[in-house]
Length: 291
Ligand code: 13P
Image (cartoon, rainbow, N blue to C red; front, side):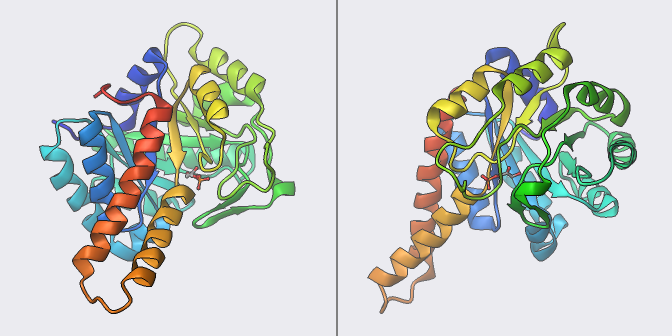
């Protein structure tokens, strides 16, 4: 019951003007902490795994743990493959049971981006009730296998966004609007709200058809996040924040308990740190009690 694709929860979120947290995980403990917190807050959830953890743990392992956690959860949960540049691996993860697949061909020329995204969309849709995310323009920074230098980053062209969505078969769409992966280098990154709003209106003028994704959540100020949600950003991606929570909590715990050899206690400290961070984002995105 609680296994869902991304589109169904995001159309609802767009209509209700809240956003669903899409949280990147790198191990099973993070995954459990994210699910437990979302259940406590009664909110819809997107678990994201990028390519490195999907290969390290194995797509079948991640999808199996997801199924077990989601089947019994009273909230809708999607499992998303994040920023995959390899068409074959996108197909493998869809076969394994991920319910939303992001093919990231945003560094390719426009026509090639459409063609690769279309190939993944056709395959994934052929498997059943699964959905696909595509990106246009390029988000700067590093997210796993995708590295985009600042001078390479390009904002999404609104007219091209309409053509891309019409031809590529995507179900949800990530336009580059000036957000970046990783830690922001300036205190006030230049986010192009007008561009985001224009793209939203072009794609959703007559009712919500194409939910929009915001990448690069970590480090955005709360008022920026809230504004993007109010303009129609219904999937909000957060990764670096959770990696920092995991590693900082691990260091802190070990520093304070150097003579203790009890992995369960270390895991509990990490879970708590992840949960605190997820609660921060749930409050900001306004998705509590929206399950
Ligand atoms: P951050 O690492 O900046 O939170 O970005 C996450 C993201 O957009 C994943 O796709």
